[in-house]
Length: 400
Image 1 (cartoon, rainbow, N blue to C red):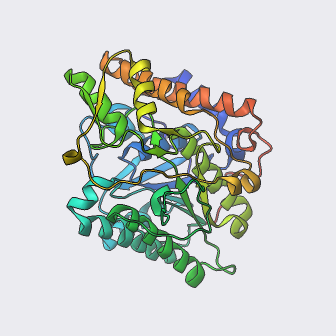
Image 2: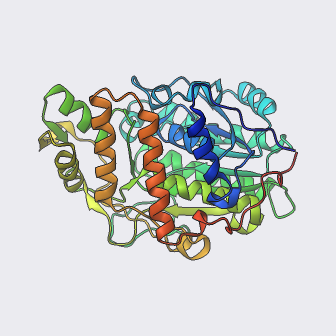
């Protein structure tokens, strides 16, 4: 049997009851009572993922350094009392091994990383050690942990050898990377593929996949040198927003888009095993990408304040001007597609930050409202992960 999920401290009874109603429905009930480890749980995307997993009825453990920003979403939405968090560095093999031995996860979502391009220029060694040796350490630990059935290694859309053409990248395209961050994510993909072939083959009980998502936005991100947090900080300070590459085009999407992909991929690994291993792109529909300038303009309009200017050449470093993802494989083989367009993603994101700036007391409630609305929109599209009939294992179907 799997361990029962903990009852979060300070969560109202009606909230717990409302969450329970969705557990058996979403992702085929795959996470009800399931022991899940999220590395990088204190980060922006990791915090959103832990909150959603908790709502799905999972018993969530986390392994990461302290929250990387102040303020931090992890703290603001009360995850410290809800996630069995262990403070540690993925570069520390012994500490990671000890943490995994205690939580005995059935599935691991690996998000711990140095996640930014610009800092990778300042400290490339840290970037490669964290993003490459971190995944080596995780997979080494998984090799000796009999409870694990599935691993989803979250890499990046920047793992491709980007020639900046109008051709969108598919999962079998060449890996590469101009800057240390992008190269480290390409290397993480290569490491994962090597371990899958060498140690987690068809006769292995462990199934391993990688997820390559587009640029995500959403409430609660305060990372330096990310577009939306930079906008929020500038507006709060009464400054102009300085935009480094206004004409750059990215596969922008709300954070819930990537997370629904990760969670559905994880559920399918648990249900269908090696048939769903390998690499998967998760991004907006073809033709739905917009430029940095368009996104900033939409954000300023939705927030109701702010102005921006282009950076001068002295404020710029090399960053790709065009990056497109082809998500045909995820659509055809997983039945996954994006739900919200870029405008909806920006509107939701701006509303969350407006609430935070106004001192809203229930930021967790705002996050859960976004999840609920996203799920309703996905259900209206008939996406398979929203159905109780989805192909996923029962909560007690994992290995012990």
